[in-house]
Amino acid sequence: MDKAVQRVAITGVGMITPLGVGVPASWEAMLQGRSGIRLIRRFDVSDCTTKIGGELPDEYYALEEREFNKRKQKQTQQTTRLGFLCAKEAVRDSGFSLAELDLDPYRCGVITGAGQAGYEGYETDEELVAVWRNPPKFVIIQQMPNALSGWVTIEYGMKGRSFNVSTACASGAFAIANAYEYIASGRGDAAVAIGVDTLLTSLSIKGFNNLMAMSTRNDAPERAMRPFDSHRDGFVLANGGAALMLEAEPLARRRGARIYAYICGVAMLSEAFNIVAPQGAGEEMARTMLMALKDARKNPEDVDYVSAHGTSTQQNDADETSAIKMAFGEHARKLAISSQKSMTGHTVGGAGAIECVATALCLYHGVLTPTINYESPAPECDLDYVPNQAREARHLRVAISNSFGFGGHNSTLVLEKA
Image 1: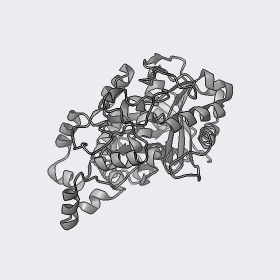
Image 2: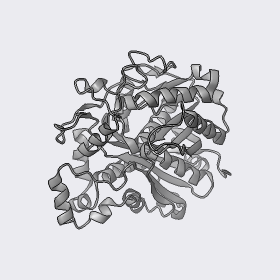
Image 3: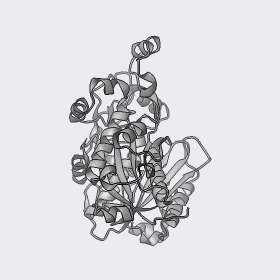
Image 4: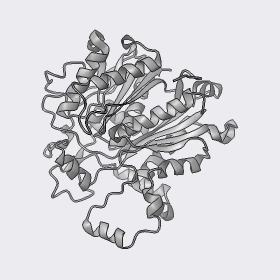
């Protein structure tokens, strides 16, 4: 891609996860190595094999009640409300204002990512039948995959590019990558990028159980997510999301914005191989990382840290480790690698955005979040996964964030210290 602007600044972040409501709460929990996985209590899981998940904290629902009046609640589904609240935190954190900056609204956009955009789960047959027999007045605008991007553009008057990306577990990363390219190409000045999902329902759990993808460690929820550990037995589904305020570097500098980090390159690829399984031992994952580095004009040896996709499944963790070795060669042994999913659970469309925010904060604060529950190293996963405790990393300069989704959708984001 021909770039008019080399780097795109991250000037604001928002995040709501099972670890906490807002960036400070979630970030502090990550540094402490806390798990957000618990026994599910918000819906009936008696007939589910997996009975654990990453539910949002109670204070999230109180915030939702305060922020959305009855009409807005009827017009939106939870994924939209969650993503909207993440966006509000990110924009507020950035201090960005179209009116105050006198910017062209047609050069400011909103790009969202959700793995099951427009899907609203119903927990019982009775609920589903009731909806079919008497559809709610706002059912169409509730279920629109582009609803979130629409609501955020309305809130902030952003009239540039606005759309939703749905690439399964890579949706959040694809949203950020598209927003980056919009700005780096010179076509846009600023964008809000959001990744979010609220897929923690009995239907989703049963579906992923059918694919043998989820942990069944119901007796020890907080220890269930264990990426790269020899006893890993699948991921744990969670609700969550994050948002980033992105600006062209000259704009961010001109207005004196705080810059958490820069995004300096991205890659978005398709494996074109299998609807759920990666090809070989991670060859296309490796290619994705190398293409992102090429886009960023970085060498593999420039990278200090990898925020891994790290899903805690047998195949993904082995293949991602193999891919890192292919992409980085001997330098792979010098990399720090960690998985925020070990603490948040797998938020699907939210994962790439949550992990990009975490990576930016790692660069900003000079610290690495840990991979928790890494107790028994797997022979096929033999790199440095920052086990169990956060680590000071003042030397941190360049990091990548990986996201690999069902459908063969791969993305790598390259971030650089501001």
